Amino acid sequence: MKNNTIFMKALSLMVMFLLSACSEGMFGSLDKLREEAGGGGSKLTPDPINFTDASATIVRTYGDSEYTNAINGDHQGEGLVSYSSSNTSVATVSEYTGEITIHNAGTAVITASKPADEVYAQASKSYNLVINPKAITLTVVTQPPAGRTLIPFHSESETAYDNSTTFMVSASGLVGIDTVSINLTGSNNYGLSVSNNTGIGSSNKTVTLNYNGTGTVPQTDSVNVVLVSGSGNYTFNGTPNIGVAIIDGQAEDRAIPVTPNNYAQFNVYANTTNGLKLHYKLTDNITFPPAAYQRNWTPIGTNITPFTGSFDGNSKTITGIYSWNRDTDYWGLFGYIGSNAVVKDLGIVNCAIVEGSYVGAVAGYVNTGARVERCYVKIEKDGPYYKGSVRGDSMTSTYNAYTGGLVGYNKGTVERCYFDGEVGGDEYTGGIVGLNEGTIQDCYSAGASSNNGSYSGGIAGQNKGTVQRCYSLISVAVGNINYPTGNFAGGIVGQNNSGASVQYCVALNSGISIYGNPAPLRIGRVAGENSGSLAGNQGGGSLPMSCNGKPILYDTGGTDPQLYPEEATSSGIHGSYAMELVGGGWHNMTTWDFEDIWEIRSYPEYNATPLLFGLDGQPPQL
Image (cartoon, rainbow, N blue to C red; front, side):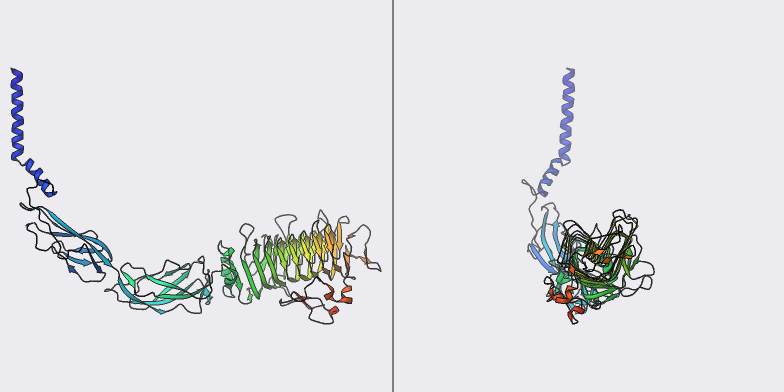
């Protein structure tokens, strides 16, 4: 009985709770939610609304005036219509009138909403608003100067070639106090960009055009680039464009000009990652200002980052390279010329170089496949601070100085070159190349070659490759009593190694001398010592040779020098007398090309030695 009483009380409380909830409209609220959501069973009447312009998309242009697109009066409800924009940076809308104000080009969704009232349901309506950029006129007032060509590097003093130029523009048709910016079309801009390119209005504005040095430009004639708006609110009528000449240096026929005004900047740029692989051409003779006991040049390329492009001297000269430090390897105009690189048609005049190992006025090192052609080095006088010469004076190792008048160490090809001056070194010294593992052909030397070390020759100190069709007038001297493997002096090469060849060369040296301990001294008119191939060479019949200051005498037949006992061993003449040239003339050297490479300018022929076609400043003929 007690349990029934408790149950009845609980049931009574539950019924009272349900009655209270109904009186407060709980279920009525659920019905209203359904009505506002448009659900079935709504007790409110639908009341759709529509804009006066019922288009799904309305298009306007930046700069257009305000306009109103409000909800028309076809709806019945009393709820107040309000408006909103999904992108207020493009357009704003008056909350209760529907008036649109345009701010920028772009898109926005404009929405009108009406709340539910006691009779009619809630309603809303939207349309897409598209604001197009305004087309204006950009006028190119002045084009980039016709006398300015863009190249990869900058020079303050060079006006014809630089990595930037300017042009002038103005704009018309802008809205209010707006200005516009400009850019270049992205389809192909040749590595160009613009700066100072904002704030362009009705007044003329100077814009800078820059070249990044890496864009490919397959022509040296002027190219056109299209200017486009950098402002989203504007486009340009037509295709405004500018024309500019660019030299990218990415091919030999597009070589970057090197001038008397930009050679210092060229020296810096050519040692950069991009600069090492490009092609250059000298436009005029260059004279370096003297440097008081310091370098005025940084060699281009190293054994880690070689130069792999080309340098065309254009038959011009570079005068006054100075360096006297003895602590740098791979030294010359170019430190290290990599495979397939080319240096050609260049004269180096009155240089004064004393550095470490791998030293040559043109290049310290020439790698396999590289070429040095139609170049010369001529030293006529001393500089203001240094004695004019090319010298390798290594301080980093006991015996490893490779020094040549043109190239210190050659694995490539050196051809149609000459040296006239003084060259010296600590071990491998030659009038053209210090140590040759490649090819030396159609070259000659004059002046003096002196060597503290072991191997000295009129053309190459030591030959492990091919030397052909060369002659030497140079005075050769070797002397170092402490050198462990001996001293070697020859009119053409100091030593001709096994597998190497010297052929069709002529030794007309003004003298060959050798100094040192009695044991390992080797001297010869063509080669001081030979383990390779010698063919078709000639040596001066009265060429003076000496050992430790004592003359080496020839017998009456002139076939072998008579040596002082135990002082030196001659490797012989290595060929017939050069006197034979008197009888038949140089043209009897049938392997020599006297049509395109060699010429004899004075007659009779036996009073002259050949000169190279196309090279200036050559020494007087014998």
